Image (cartoon, rainbow, N blue to C red; front, side, top):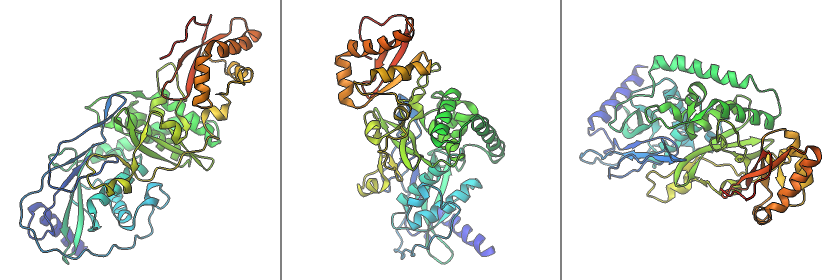
Length: 450
């Protein structure tokens, strides 16, 4: 124990004093959180917040310049130790990491859980330690939505242990001015964790099915009813599961992490996905239902207080690509060289299945020749608003050109059952494959594109 303490003190002094004990001059990288890559160079930059749906997100990257010191002779990089059996083996992102990234992940998770504010000795210095730290940090955040106190900045540095071996160091901060801190104090963390647990149990206790699709559907609806999409730059919790479930306020990252936390409590495999929408950073979920992966964007389904959409419930990569851009895998990003602020995913699963898509599962798919069958599905919902999905873009175009014909066929089926029961189209989404039908006394005289 004394030897470990001595090693840590040596490392701390080495880094803070920037003395000749360092292998290279580096208190370099100051980065901010999700899926962005720190730059390992000498050019200082300012935070570049990414946004989604017109609101800012805390997906960004920043660096401060290195201090001027005399370079020291290069030391040989120690071989990467074999990762030991880890409690994180079952976590999604962890399974895709390299050996050294897993070493960093294990140490980092323990340090974050203990809220260690001093320099964290992650392990031997890897050749691309800055990138490896970025990936390990992101993997921890992606695998553990229950961690809500992770701050928006971190620093990396290189020091040496008592034997002269180079080691990678990391410290968390709430600001680019490098002031060690987490989002909450140790005392706040204790009772806030209990609040999050209680809030999650309030939702999960309302689930009435053991079918994975039904569980996901009920959680989706309960989350939409509980959370308000809001931008509050003074509240860092809006990016967390705590903000969504306890405070009822969140941005996309908060929605995604909350949904992940709820799904994991039922043993449903899920991860977060990073990307762009309308040139702004965005986050959603990938969910594994009945052994197949789907995209789920609860944020974009939470359209209003009066209506829950299912337009982004279990859709394919091709479908979500109509208005979302999926960030690249981190290995592709690192190969490019200049990666400052670029978003990445640890390992985005392929989402090509349609079996458990919302509209496929419930039969709300328009194919041009199924208006009679579809009308009966709509009637059975007894709802004032129904979403329908076109089979594909060709069907959507044909429907748009012959709107009166197809709506007339649907209304005819409705009137056979109830003369007062008619629907009209509220809109056709020009960026996806869905349309909404709203109950009304009479059909409109024109086709209301939005």
